[in-house]
Image (cartoon, rainbow, N blue to C red; front, side, top):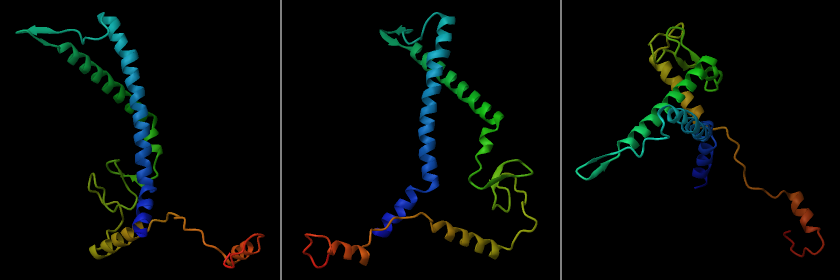
Length: 184
């Protein structure tokens, strides 16, 4: 049970899980910001141009049933505005090169297709070009893969252990006034 707890703590504190959690939080905050821009600025510009803040009240009656196609149009317009804002932000990030700054995962760029590949890759997964001078034989490649997998399994996270009482600490407690327990 203790080993299982250690493995769980190592997994929970590993870089991938923390990156995922951080990305989720930042993504949620960013989505709120983009949603606010779409609803409070861009949708209001549409409302000023069309004359209505939203189309949710627009409906037609068909055999006594109200079909609210205006709500659908409002949602569709919100989606299109939100998607275009997200597209513009992503294009801006790519143009500024912010996406290429974070190269913590050990990746490099393929010289042939310019896709991101692992620094340890022998062949580009996108275009299939060989990225090393000489490919190793299958047995050597498998041996390298097994060695990397074993190294990955040994997570080097410090796991605090229980406090252990040193003989000096036991002697110090035994000499305190009022302590009648001979074991300390």
